[in-house]
Image (cartoon, rainbow, N blue to C red; front, side, top):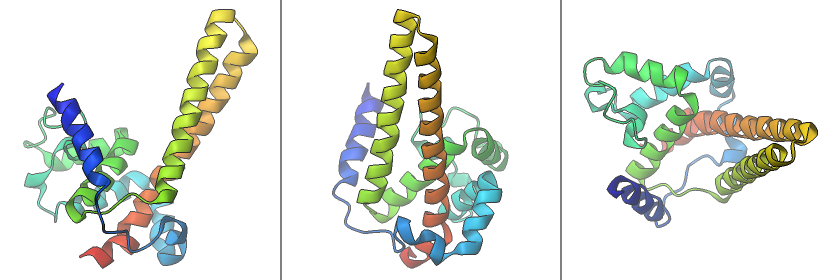
Amino acid sequence: MAASQEYMDKALLRRSYRNVWQTDLTCAIQADFPYCCLSLWCGPCVSYMLRRRALYNDMSRYVCCAGYMPCSGRCGESKCPELCLATEAFLCFGSSVASTRFLLQDEFNIQTTQCDNCIISFMFCLQQLACICSLVACIVGNQELSEASQAISCVSDAVYWTRSTRWRWTRGMASWAGLR
């Protein structure tokens, strides 16, 4: 319960942040096209590199999912942080990207943009719609509705991965350089 309240407090604190990303999400491709391409071809590798950079290459500071997930600190990270980070980046890619993003936002007091909020809200709406369709399909036994639920869920997943990819390279080299 206390951990849940701590996460809520952090989310509320982020509303008061005053700094902004140097490169807007909508201009990221233009700002660093080669890095964008690298992140599309090897997203987990870029996620790994960015987290190391966010930790100032001091892997003694590494905590699974940057301390933002329930598993954080319980994975034996201190024994082999490089392997744990690589595992996180490849197996929990979305969480890895989001955690690095939150880590940077909290360290540099960077606010979430309206574009970010719009994408996140759209993704959550799709997830809720998919859940409702799935529940109704189970109750009434409608196969078409179940398939529609799966299709909506796939679209929601695509939005999530697109968002993660865009944040990764937007907040990667192009945006971050201006904050240092």
